[in-house]
Amino acid sequence: MRAPGTLVGSGRNADVYLLGGGKRVLRRYRDGRDAERVGAEALLMTHVRSLGVPVPEVFDVSGPDIEMERADGPTMLDALGNRPWTLRAQAAELARLHGLVHRVPADGLPGDWLRQFPGTTRNPQADVLLHYDLHPQNVILTADGPVIIDWEGAARGPAVADIAMTWVIVGYSDVPGSGPKAAFIRSFQQTFTRSFVRAAGPLDEQWRARAVGHRLADPNLLPTEAARLRKLVPAG
Image (tube, rainbow, N blue to C red; front, top):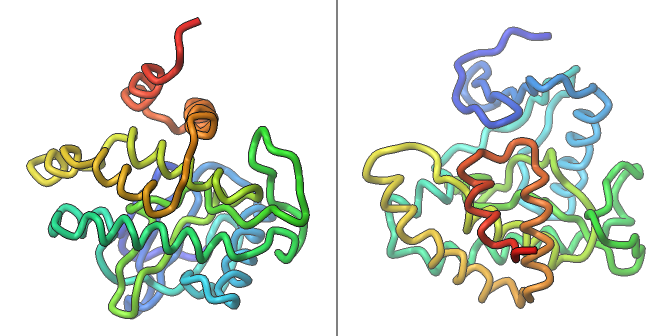
């Protein structure tokens, strides 16, 4: 395992470190996942990049580590905090990125490791690639355009499933950070969510309910997020 450089990011399952020269980063999982699963994620990223989906280039995989191109720029979430008047444009851009991902047929992907979206039946003719976690914090706005990161949860299924998961994540997750900017972002969280669904939808109540159920089953869900979601579950 190579020695990492400066820590530049930390998520719920992995840390990201700068590598020499700052043009590459090392994503290191810290949850004990096996090398086969990490390698499959890297292979998926390489494949979808070749199909025109904006994904960092992968250079090497070793154990829990993926060495990849650095996507340099603010996240879409940061951009919303700094320029809230771009809310509708950013929501439309997020919907467009969903469209790019969903143009990739699931049966054209390398290997056969993608899990089926829970509660759906495998359909080789209709299933597409799902990111499963495509929200503003996983989009980097680089000088060359937006880049989608964090592909660890990728799945296969109907495109609407991905839209539903983004709806529940964006609309009901805690905004990271503290202070005025985080509070400001929270104030228009639901407005952004509605704008995204209008651009990417439609999204019916059945899919919203399914997304809430799947999100509540996420072991990384924070207690405050779980409490917020339980209010959406009908009594009885």
